[in-house]
Image 1 (tube, one colour):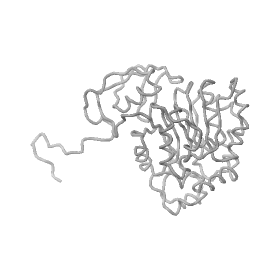
Image 2 (cartoon, rainbow, N blue to C red):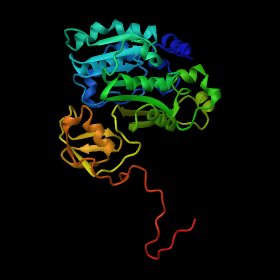
Image 3 (cartoon, rainbow, N blue to C red):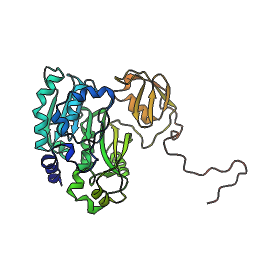
Image 4 (tube, one colour):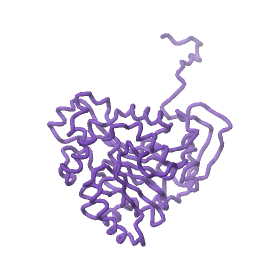
Length: 347
């Protein structure tokens, strides 16, 4: 299947117009990124097959690794955001894509006004990152855009990401997920695999996989339903549904399996670049500037132990535990007696 994917992205696809579904289609970027995207070389953009936006906040000076970097679109976009003192490394297994990315390295260095390029591209497999010259604990952020689903050893990828991240670093990536496990007959279909469908994880299997490999509390940033828009492929998929979703996974020790309440809160200072009014951690934590915002212990650590710490005021500590944090989808599982008559509820 690895060879099939290399052939699909190296020989069969020459632009996004060659895709047979809309699984790998771009989304509307925020206004502050549009001028940077407009500066990227046309060929690099034309051969982009991502399904999400992998540009997290506060990137100045960061070291970033892009898994499955393809033609280099995300690498070059992030190279503008990290600045000349930052670094972006792309890893890809497809010679044709790497050739496009490397050919335009000097072009982007000149466009962004750098004295030297702050990007490099390595040929390799994302399941074999330990075979590349990548230093353990070196990267602030690892990204990936619609590539993990193509991997033939997803647990190994996640373990290597954790090993390569600094403490407090994050894995910020977009991918395709299914609403149920993909049936075995579809798993070996090269077209469905190349279109990022057959290799997609059932979303709950992904959550468990992340937790088993060191990321205790995966956070969903955004998601959208994929409509496929190919009648023949839709008929083969039946009732199976697919989604593009962006997650952020923090490499922080001490995160708990559930959101626990310690009576803590944070205040966002409004100082993250391009985000003066609110900071979005995930799809249910949009923290307005200046407002006291109650948080669970995990959210506290994600902010306090990461590059975002200087942008927040932290209230409270871990001295007193108040149970599950309200609104996190978990509650005390036990039945309460009716206080009015003291009778136990029937089964």
